[in-house]
Amino acid sequence: MTSLCKRALLAGLGALSLSAAAFAQYPNKPIKIIVPFLAGGTTDIMARAVAADLQKAFGQAVVVENRAGAGGNIGADAVAKSAPDGYTFLMGTVGTHAINMALYAKMPYDAVKDFAPVSLVAAVPNILVATPSFPVNSVKELIDLAKKEDGKLTFASSGSGTSIHLSGELFKQLAGVQMTHVPYKGSSAALPDVMSGQVNVMFDNAPSVMPHIKGGKLKAIAVTSGKRAPALPNVPTIAESGLPGFEASSWFGLLAPAGTPKEIVEKVSAQIQKMLQTPEMKERLASQGADGVGNTPEQFAAHIKTEIDKWAKVVKASGAKAD
Image (cartoon, rainbow, N blue to C red; front, side, top):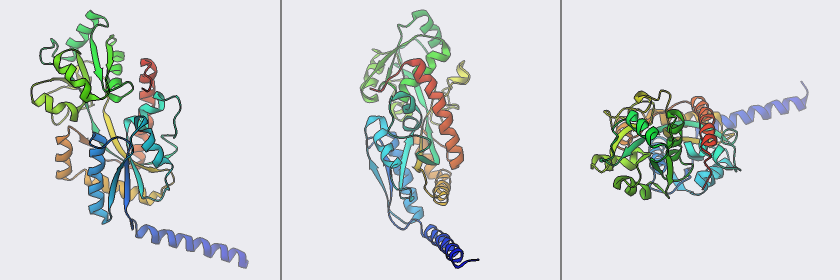
């Protein structure tokens, strides 16, 4: 072996040793989780729950930074272009990593190539709701009435292209009915018109409508998730109500920039999975109408690819465009 080869080998071994030492010390400075939406929303709530747990487990500060705009694209792009060193993460959503791929004509990042999935954190069902006086109490009754009215029934959303809007579009496609979409600037603007009966129904996120259901201002007809919501055990899913295969949950998961060391991704993923098994976290998520998931980086990556394909078809069929 030449002296040059020996030096190269020693240099390589030194790099491996340094890498191992660096990983053993991880994390040795504050970690940042970027939320691509405003503070106070469901994505922000999920991020802060994860941040609190990671901070406790790792003994380092974990800060949450809100960077809203462009349907989540601004914050997601910031993470995609961050250093892949394990100190910057994104609380991604079905919007940033599935719907937006089809909704926006030009994206600043690639949802698959530019990220290293860590773990799916939680899924939040949308709930099909209406004012209590609306003469429909089941999915079958809604389908029958929609066919009779042929486009006259209306459904509200928090904006064109949102998961709430596309839940309605998926319902129309699978049920073979026509309903008129009425977009609003957020759920808080839409709900008063649903509660008053001005708009017939809405497929809204569980955290937004749960207080109104409990208060008697809205009735829950069905949930959009694959299984019943723990907070509403007596409310059937749309799938079991006559539309098998229907599933349209909003989901939230942690992602790192592509190139982040596998050991770091797996360490953080393992901690999130552990966190989601604690009684405290289960109770916290249930109070939001959410279902904790927790999975491996490989499983989360597969989920993202499946969701991209699924929602691309719904967006194309609906003709939805970004506001």
